[in-house]
Length: 177
Image 1 (tube, rainbow, N blue to C red):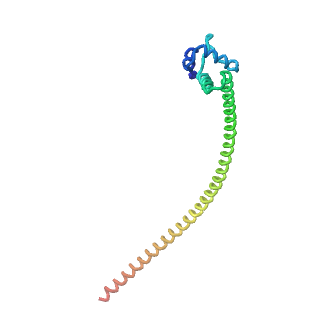
Image 2: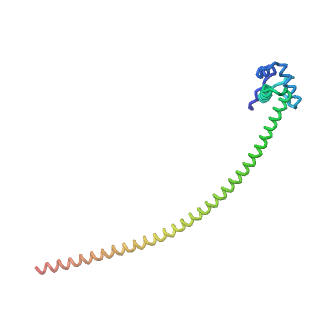
Image 3: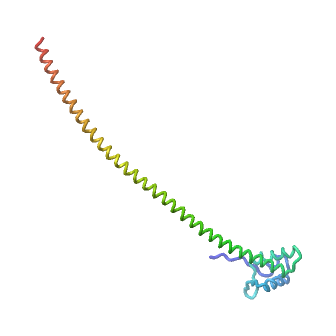
């Protein structure tokens, strides 16, 4: 459901402006001569919040003095047109700024990509070096295990020789006594 803009019938609109219905008709005719159209519903003029702002600006300008209602209407409409034009220019500038921002973001992303690509290559190099070191470590472990087995075997042989020597000595001691 789309929200609808708040609207006013002529009598309520005149109350909001603080003028009579006939004065409102006069103001309406001045705006109509300047090219402003108002919505109609079942033959009655319907005023919107934007119309209320427009009429209030015109009344404030008229209260400042020195201008006719017609001049105030034209001034308000020219100011509104220039604001609309300024808004369009601002929208165009925003669009250009947005395009420039997008181009800057693309450039930043490309730079980041380059940096990460270099970093990725560095990581690959580090991984290769680590793999080589792991292979060398495995070789050293195998050499140490072989040496440990040899040392253990030598120690067994030495213990065996010592046992044999002790037995011979024990036998000799028996006969010496």
